Image 1: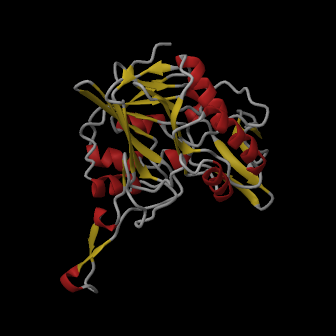
Image 2 (image 1 turned 90 degrees about the vertical axis):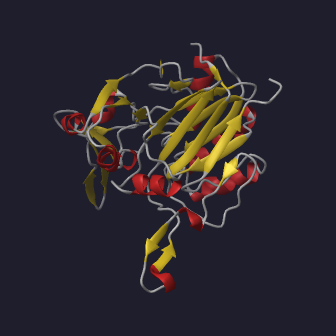
Length: 327
């Protein structure tokens, strides 16, 4: 399918597991530092202190693309808690007035919890929300110590808050914005096998293993003269599967950037680190920003393998990729 080229894409991390106020900015990279937020505290002279950004086990990014003089902005995922995304957005000066839609990567609650705060911030004004139809799936984690049923999104409550639900299973383009939503991702690699048996879904009569998380989807932008920018939520489909899927959909074979959760953390996924690194090496990405569920072992492996491309994700950071001036 034809994905129009854009002149610029800016990805602002609103929620991530990590925040470091001492990370340095660089070309195409902004870091908020401690100056991003202040709070009342009578224990300091003047009654104020700097607070920086909120980090939590969740993920959310603001994606803004520019084509000529037109700019389109969406929110991709909303973090874990009701308040982290809107709090960080406020500290960054993001008011959501220009946001045209919300897209959810999948239905897990650490990617959808901030919808409550967004609804409070915006009021009950209509806003499209693009989801996969399986986002409503009941899921749980069943481990030897017990079972934890995850919070499940409520269609009725979301609609009452003004969200206009758009269910799409297949790839789709967001109007003329130059943003592609992958829909369900083809699973083609031999090593990205999905979630372990502890991850289950309700099938009407009981709980069964849910390895695939079929509602997992990603965003894709094609920057003129640079290539594809792929943004994942958790990457449950496998980041290599996702990138290859994006390339097949668009006919583009150059990966400019890969941003988001790679889901390589924990013993169930650490065997995937080496083949993921090997596969990404073949793709030659200019920028790798693994965050959220990537895991510290994978972060170290990726940083060592791609010293010129790997960049530490951190709440509040903004990554900007622009088309070359001569393209």
